[in-house]
Structures are given as structure tokens and as C-alpha cells.
Length: 431
Image (cartoon, rainbow, N blue to C red; front, top):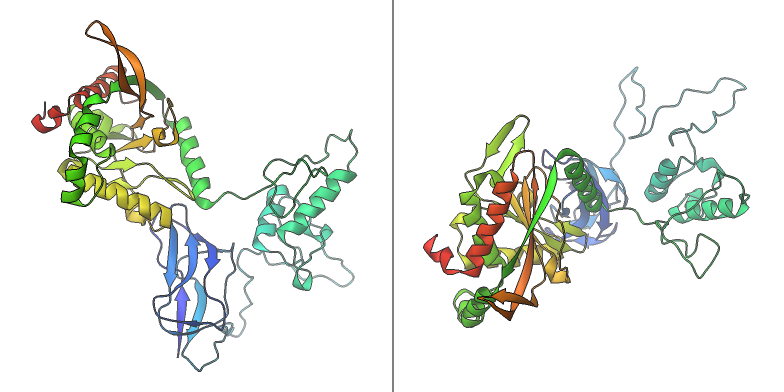
């Protein structure tokens, strides 16, 4: 008895996924629950576990292929059986065979007619077998695959073959030819040098789905919102003293390190309660005020920046906040964040200070209306009670959507955070 391995049901906002890596090969014994294949979506990497123990059959999709929910990935046969590829469905009388996925049916050739030339603007209609990465590059650059020699089995064209052909075409192009190809810094790693100069190598690497999604959302924020950033600075002497005094006891009692983010999250929640428009979103001509406080915490991961959501932060203790952020950091590193942990959010916090940033202008995380940027803590001279003293200072930046948030509210919101953190007792007294 065989068991199908299929693409899991994807969330409503995710249309498809890309096969990122196979962890088990055909003919290999697998145990129920083993991770067979990674599927990359716009937000997270999904692991597809084995539904049963047995022998893995042939891969029905390759790395780089785009798959949809419930699509067959492979089959698992019981131990001792030979896994087979699923047979093609039988055609009913009079029914024509459907073309493969993503390929357009080609009309039959008439007697004496030759194959149609490559159609500009697409890659349909060619005969050459293509690797997925090569197919994307050929389509992107509008190339004729029939002009490219493949180095793979049965003449299969790989990305490296496309790059080598482009390199040869560039060298052969006359210098005065305005249509001569100019390669950019995104050439695939398969070619050590595309310009002909070994001392100046260039590489083209495809964007991951996550990186492409990040780019799409950031451009969307720039185009669809009236972004404005206001700044302030904060003296963190009191927070540092409080943290140094209690960090050992805090860690012993709660089993988690006391960082700075819990102070900032609680200060943000306190300020959002005073200025609810910064916790609101714009929906058409309506402003939606949220009565809950789901704070997105920007976390760096090997695949790019992700923003998991701490839910109901007004109900969380500082230990709960620190524990949640620590879990997000580990999950981001492991690539195990779930869709639920990345969806939603009413306000975001990003901390460029961990990388040494002294000042920046963060970009909104749509559809949210504001984001707080933290920065590096740096000792600087300041005037205090008529005297110059050295204090641990941090610049804060608040980027907001000026369509619904007035400058007065944004400035006062940032001042409220400053006042709360410069006198942390306010967090306890709610003043």
C-alpha cells in the first residue's frame, strides 16, 4: 500500500510555494514524521513530513518547481514494495490529452510545415528541456532556448549554460552596438566571471520568495502611504540601572534573560493606549481602531527580515515578552516560524542598534500605520540641570502614515515613550 505525499493546505493569502530542498531521495527508507522536503512560500519555509514509514518513490517535482496545495510531491511505498510513479489518468473516449502544467498546447504541423520560430516574450513552444532556474532566466531575459546548448542529460539546459551563452554573446557583441548585452551584479554563481575579466567577477542570484515579498511590501508602503518620520532621543540611564540591579534575579526567577525590548514593548503599549490612532489601520475611507495590542518585532533571519507578532501585549508581563521574543529569534534562525506568528499586527518595533545603526528611518509594515525604530545606545555629552554630563543615549525614530496620523499625535506619542523609559516607575504606576 502506498501513501501520497502532497503539498499541505496553504493559507488563503498564499497561492503557491517553491520546492526549496529535498531531504530524502528516491529509494531511501523514511520513518513517519521525517522531513521529506522544504517548501518556500512568501513568508515561511514549510516542512512536509512523511505521512507513513516506508520507501520513498520518485520525486514528482524538482527543486525550483512551483507547486500548489494538494499537488503530489512523491509516494511512499510499504517496506519491500517498489515505489512507482503514479500512472497517467485514463482518457475517456473522445477526450483529448491536456497539455502539461504551464505549457500551451501547440497546433499540429501541416505537411511540409516547419516548426514555428521562438515566440518573443515567452518560452512556450520550444523543444529544449530546461531546468527550472534556466527557465526563469530565459523567460526573464526573453531568450531563445533553441540557440543555447544544454550540458545536462538529454541536452537539458541549466542556468550555467544560459550564463555561458550570455557571456559568449557579450564578448562577440561590437563595442559600439547599443544593443550589446551588459551584465549586472546579479549573475548566477555558476559563472566565476561574466565580463571576461577574472579579477572582476559578477554573480546573478535569484531573490528568495521571502526577499521578493519583503521588497514588494516595502515598495507598497512607499507608494500607498504618506510616510513621515519624527525623531527624539532618550536617556537610558534609569533603564540600564534597573536592568543591572535585577537581571540576575530576573533570569533566576523566570528562566529568561532581561533585555531592553520588554521595556520598549511595555512603553509602546502605554503610549498606544494614550494615542490610539497610532494603533489603527486605514481600510478604504475608514479608520479601524484596534482595541488590542499585537506588536510586531522585527527579527533578522538567514532568509531576510521577518516580523513575528506578539499578541495581546497589554496582558503580558516583562518575562512573557522576553520569552516570546527569544522564541521568535530561535524560530527565525531555524526557519520554523508559522503563518499565524507572522500574520496581523497593529504596530511594529525594529531595532537597528543591534547592528550598530545610530539613526535610520524605518519603513511601515503595511497595513500598519506606524513603526518605532530603536538604535544603538551610545554615551554622549548632554546638558542636565545646567551641567554637562555623559549619559547612555539612544535616538528613536517613528515613521507614520500622515494620512491618518497628525504630526502632533506622532510627536506626543514619541515623547510619551521617552518619558516612560527615562522614569520606568511610570510603567508600574501607569502615569
